[in-house]
Length: 243
Image 1 (cartoon, one colour):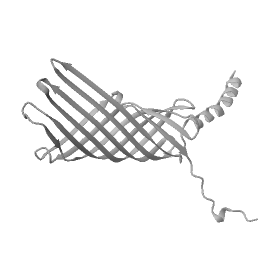
Image 2 (image 1 turned 60 degrees about the vertical axis):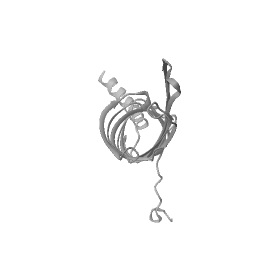
Image 3 (image 1 turned 180 degrees about the vertical axis):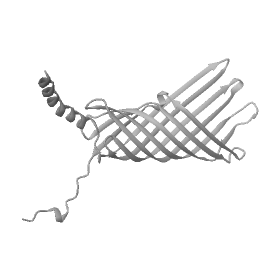
Image 4 (image 1 turned 180 degrees about the horizontal axis):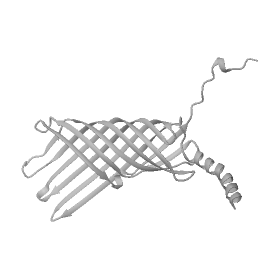
């Protein structure tokens, strides 16, 4: 019986070793890729001769590069750009109306760390931790004729600059259709952010804010693609056998 168990263990050991080597990402592996985020939303309310409409479109891209400094653990750097366009319209009794269009641009950079857990030879779970800086610019345009202003007006407000610093932990899953290709998706995050902005177009007001929270909204879903590779070592002249 003991011999049978020993033989089974000897047979299973190389299988387990092979599985582990295939499932985890080895030290020295590099990857380049990014994530894409697209979303749109709209809302409409009406009643008693009044009507309210809201629509928003959001698009973002985040390229990155990383390197595994040990088996399953990587560090890297990334860039991100995001644009959001929102329109709010109100139609009130007696022909009064207002419309506000806001366009928000953000660009920044971050450093991150990632740890992978293998679920199978093709699937894995990962956890990202990142620290980043973002520069924002927001442009608003307001048109309409309100009850308190009995004449049409067009108010092109100046660009509002802002800065933000953030730290976040983001979970995700990854699928490897091949050894070099990884397709991943993330959902939710635990995030802290500090932001400040100056608004000289609104009576010289400035604002500061900070928030910490667990975000589980559908807008946090992102999809990404990575290409994994290893650089071949350069052959030195001293290493070449000239015999």
